[in-house]
Image (cartoon, rainbow, N blue to C red):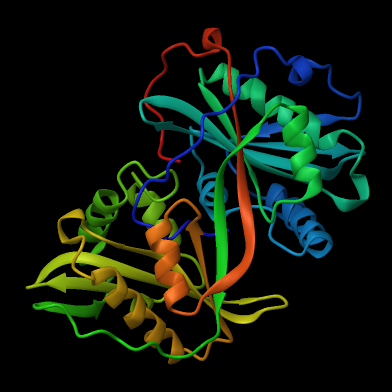
Length: 347
């Protein structure tokens, strides 16, 4: 799953405290052979591809987001994968990313279980191991993403006393150009120039998304991992300049998706803080939608935090409609499990 396309940090509800609820301390099922990895490669990727395909067919959506997956593919000292096997077959998988937010260490995770092996405690085994990892990392909080939230995800969240802290709306729009407002004075849009623009774009992105759990504090490795994806095209990363100075960007992602056809996604969009309030977001969005209309897409998608009311209203005004919602569940860990640790990555 892609990152949320917003330019503000969201307001998050406090997470409950797990200290009085020992479910995560229950002994693991004898199943289960768990392997913890710090890099996805070789046979792990092949095994995971089969698991993801089965989960996607059963659930109708991708079980994992892009951010953590790319970190593990390239190797990271702040990310782990937990692989659950039964008779040497991969039947469950979860991965984590440790990061800092508001001065506190958090561990964010996602997990899935093969449809043929569900209701056997494998998901709970994975989440128990992830919580143990969060304790070892000195984390203050654990976040669990539930994509296209379901009764099953709500049940495991309830059993581990996780509570909803964030809702990410997935909105769709029919293809076609959008009326482009009169460009603000001095504004121009051009395509990204690989190599020449890398440093500029990274600095701009991290300034726009300072403190954001998915888009903020990217490294050059994070950025280049995306430039290496099969869907990337430089002309789909639109750079906004005001009087020749970078002021924002609209990154578009076009790819084939099973059951949806050729989808154009508002991947990331934002403007520098000093230019807020000048209508540049509307101008950039309209420019990008018109660009997508020339890319022969069957539909347009965007992810946006429900709490970002201004952004949601902007997408409604461009005839986006609700498709589904992803939910973040969170729990606070006991204070004694939070010793000081070295700085972690962005979420």
